[in-house]
Length: 305
Image (tube, rainbow, N blue to C red):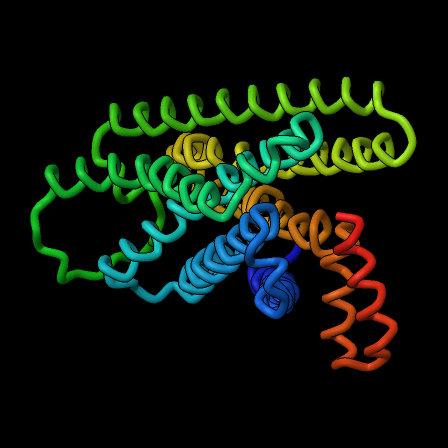
């Protein structure tokens, strides 16, 4: 079995790779106005930014846990809020991206109306409103239940520190289960209807529908991993009561499978599989080499969108 140092080193390599790829994709997003004026690319960039924050904060927690030095409770609080909110923002954003694909394929005539820049702002209000609710509920109970003295250090920074009542943990579980159910229904609904359109379509429409269907499937798998991660704290809390070593191993496994793994799928779904975005990415990676060739390909992609 790998030592704690080897585990931390492996995570550092993975985090650096994923952060580098995500940052490169975010830079590409801001280089073309066609990207930051299109809902699906705006949502994609938002998912990447949320992933970057999650990777950074969770990696800090892992390093602090490995070093073993006490952490100031206020620092732990900030990292908990960022991690908790982003853990909900990512699946909510993926759900919105799935709905966007549903509208594009099943309601193409209304796509421009329903997926405009103004609608994107409204979608973000909904995403952030739903994303901060679980964190706010936990923080309100925590601040009401504990003293206001935060000038102290804690040895281990985890979400369980802010769960001061048993019913509070049940409340968090109920909220996460509700989110899971709603997002699962949306994914299933979109998949079923896109499948029907793909079967009925012909020619280029059939190809587009099938590609949209594969995109929804990837979103569904990515969303499943993210949603499972919402249940991990409940299982970790139960394991913590039995064996601290088992808890450490289980927490590390969850981090790799349900935090790192879903974050590597975002670049695949839109960074590589999306022809328009991939052409722009390839152009900027090569620093403008073969400029005329890529520009002509990019223009052709826009014309066929």
